[in-house]
Amino acid sequence: MTSDLMDLASGREVLFIGGKGGVGKTAVASALALRQARAGRRTLVVSTDPAHNLGHLWQRPVGDQPVDLAPLLRGVEIDPARTTDEHLRAVRDTMERLMPEHLQGEVRKHLDLAREAPGTHEAAVLERIAEVVEGRHPDELIVFDTAPSGHTSRLMALPELMQAWTEGLLRRQDRSAKFGAALRGLEGDRGERQAADIIGSSRSVGPARTQDRRARRDAEIRAILDRRQDRFRSLRAVLQDPQRAAFVIVLAAERLPVLETIELHEQLRRSHMEVEALVVNKRSPADAGDLLAARREIEDAYLEQLTTELPGLPVVQIPLLPGEILGADGLEALGSYL
Image 1: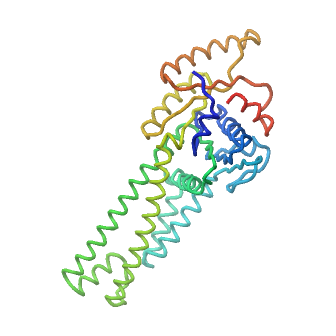
Image 2 (image 1 turned 30 degrees about the vertical axis):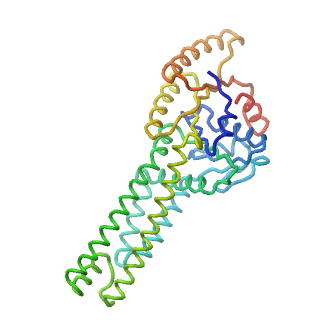
């Protein structure tokens, strides 16, 4: 079964291009984005892979802010380290503003340790992806060139996990507020002071001022968590809506890429995101000598395994092309097969 990826992309707001490393995801994402732009649609191609190739492919600097690649086409390379630093800096600024002074040293220590903690970079990159999707122009297509399969599957599962985590924080915040209110109601001024100690307010201020400070702080915490929850809920809604978003897996017709594609497909389904097409890149010709003909036969067997394991999925096949795929001309040649 074959499919025109232009039709798939034109009907959606967001397209994710993923798969095993080294199979040509960046080239396919860029070629498709260029074709959409040349067809008259505003398009943004975004690399989330820490090992960026977007700038190398386009033969120009591409960074963390959008740059023009062609008419109606811009590119961004999300910098995980910078994104993580900005994410933790924002968290630190908020925590230092909300937490009592005697706890701020612990906050800084915790955030310094969190910088290298498992999942910190993924959470920061997810925030950046959410920002990009939130800031999307109504007529724009966003094409995400994602990191290799394992990283991508974790990233796609994060919106649901982060939303659940934020909901947990909101419940804790509500329980904390109710507990403080209970103390105040049970024991009057003494309960007020105990509640102030629990939430970190100073003993040096009176009950009314403490209560006002606590109310402002609780309201700000609630607003921050509500905004975060809304952001992840919105992103999750986009990712799980097949009318708005789709995932395309790029692979080579070889044993490991085929097995990894089958596994990635299942992981994405568990995250409630549908794979809409497969792109088999660099197919060997059958009529260019014995060596390539023999490789073609091996590829055919793996392609048969793929279509047996994932029946009904559209498959786009791109032949092995002469020369390197570089710049707009090379990408246009590749895009003609999409």
